[in-house]
Length: 173
Image (cartoon, rainbow, N blue to C red):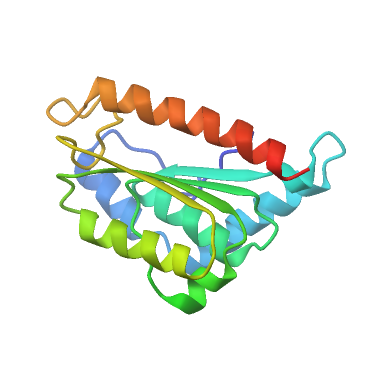
């Protein structure tokens, strides 16, 4: 397992500062950093490079999907309420199996956007498994999200993630 530090060592407990850090991450640099992390993992003798996956929540979910677009060797990608694309040029580049967990009440990534992504993926013959949780909004898996945390949905999403990675590993042999 490897976590990529997209903030380059900067940390904060302040929500407003966290938003500034998030907005300050250049997408092209983040993609380069994630590809470098992928290459580092793939070069290790104790890692089977055809079994490398990515996972992210919110912004991290978007970046996990961006890695799937930009790294053809990525085997599996989990997007938890991250922004999506419907651009067929981008989707055509995705070789990874994709799992998505989203909230029906999400105001950042709407169910309409999620279904459009799913439809685009399926139209291009890509592997995608999407679930939209009723009564859940953005960050429903985060227990620190006091008003929006949905423990049942979070537990189900985690179960789906574990099952997805187990199945993805089996199917990439």
